[in-house]
Image (tube, rainbow, N blue to C red; front, top):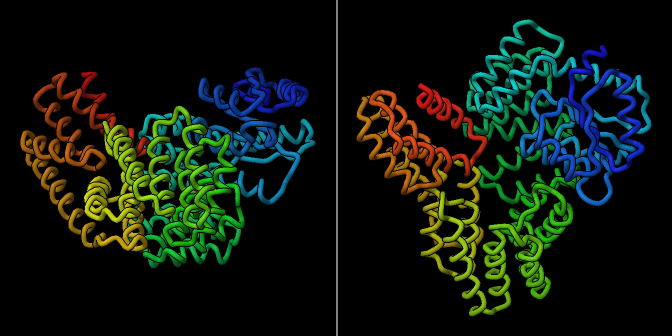
Length: 537
């Protein structure tokens, strides 16, 4: 048993030195050797960035700065914890708000103070068994190799270990994230044939959503909520489905129910604000944004968009002076944030327009256009473009809004969330732009271009494929599918005719674009693997 603890690296996070010392003594007595300590959230994140920890023991209340939940959410978002890591939240309080907030980021366990050495030993030993042998799976995931991670999991699953349920859950999640939907469905149905598990039912609902089977998906998520009222992830997915079905008012109500269960989720509060503002419910939007801004101060999710949303909702509620003050706060709160000036400008457009100051609104709009051009030196980031399109719509500049929205559609022809936002924006702002028809038309164009490129690749006409896809990638720098296929065409060309520095640089250019837009895109792993293989031969 001592060897088991001796092989692990531990991080203790607590603002009280006495507590850190006491925990270190307990771990030492169990055989642990490698033990680091952090006094606050910033130190904890810095240490997790510097090395991989097998176990993090984190107090929830850490005084001023990040709390335990915010450390956990940042570690999850920035992938500082592997699937083989253990995160234990230690707390002296167990309010529903705290527990629900932390549960959403799935700590591996809780410890309520006070606890004994024997209790900690038992809890850790069980968690070691649950996480056993996941090192290779984690290495494959770090290398963006989902197929490799699934192979490692299949090897472990074949032995029917005690942590089988954990392994099947992990495999289904990786399959869904890497778009292996048939395989994921098979795993989930295998689990549900033995026992009803909310996480497995949720996985099936996600698959239905990804297949655009929205009616079935809504029924699945509603069924989960009926059986498990506190399962907040089901509310989020039901709202996402309702948005895809153009049921915007229902989506707002569903998210409000989730927020009542778990009010400390910043992204959900921000989403309620976004939807309520577009649904012309400024009081609901203001309340949600107030919550999000208040919670976000030390969070990885703190962003100028939350302040811009708060300013717009206050303006829409007739609180113009308060709204202007919030907009003016943005560069002060985010002095080094590259997007702060854009969001301040678009919020000011909205506030000035509501106040009847057309000249002020036009000046802010000109500033927003400059900021968007500055931000878009690389791939166009769609949320920025949508933000400016809303400003155009507010000032009645429909042609400019329509042109910008068409670019966003082309860059995101297969992104249901972005397309839904565009339709919602057009409907609620009364913009004279048939978004549904535009989406169908642009999708058709993009799919035809992409299919032609793939056909040329399959027929070995690489020069033509490269010319077609490279041109399309420059026309649609934010389209991940087109950029990845342009990279693939170049790789296949070099696999047959030899590499050149210029073509290698071009492949890196397309990969970097996608990496910037979607670092977790499952398709990146395959392209990177082929590039590595090519350059190492």
